Image 1 (cartoon, rainbow, N blue to C red):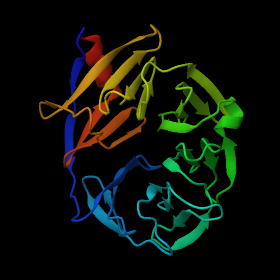
Image 2: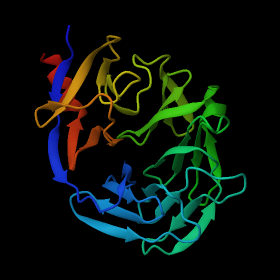
Image 3: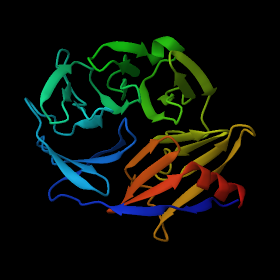
Amino acid sequence: MPPISFALTPGPIVRRPPDHHVSTMFYDARGELLLSWANGTGSLLIERVGTMHEAIALKGSPARFPVVQRFSDGRWLLADPRCRKDDLNCQILSPALEPLHAFHAGDAIHQVIIDRDDNIWIGYFDENTTAGLLRFSADGRITFDFGASSGLWVLDLYAMYLDRTGAVWAHPYPDLCLARISGETVTKTLDESPVKGARAILAGGNHVAFFGSYEDDNGVFLLDLSRGTGDAVVLTADGKELDPDSPAPIATQRETASLLVGDTVHALHLSDLIRAVEGN
């Protein structure tokens, strides 16, 4: 059976700054979609998608390609993905962009989520084999260690996701399982995911959508947990299939995925995807 085709819904057109490229697309703790544009020198522009650019001037020794997040009260988190043993590689800035404090979060930061309680969740890639997935307080204290709590060794956190209940989902390598973290409780939803190397997740009810894989950067696999089976889905934008070898920047939160295709942000809602697959 050939893959099902699903058309993304076009939305706002972004304003690509000269000499900058997308560093991060993310949902902040308030659920607002933002884009960070970097030029490799530490200069950053933050775009509230569909609204405006906000210039951020980094203080001290700037990261070339920082990972950005924002707290519910408007404070900013700027994380340098690479650091040495004692570097304070996470900076907290006020809403007015004044430095408040900094802390050491470890090397090889892959992605950052700030949840609705302003906890900082940091997932690491495979050049840091001891961190995996950690939760920090806003002042930089480690308050939860996914590996220690779950018994899983996380060599590389492929995907991380905040659902509508406030729980965080994790898709770690090498187990390639799927786990849900609510408070201090870890529940393994899948011992092994149906795709290898997903780079984003959406979950709701009995369904989980896995975005990307080792074979297709932009494909989707929709899994029905109640049946234990799923369907491959090909995403299209403006009538064309997304390039399987060119990953579109993606951000997921609650039950929505946003993908940047060209200069347009396209949306996918999990309920629409489920209806399209079930109606095929």
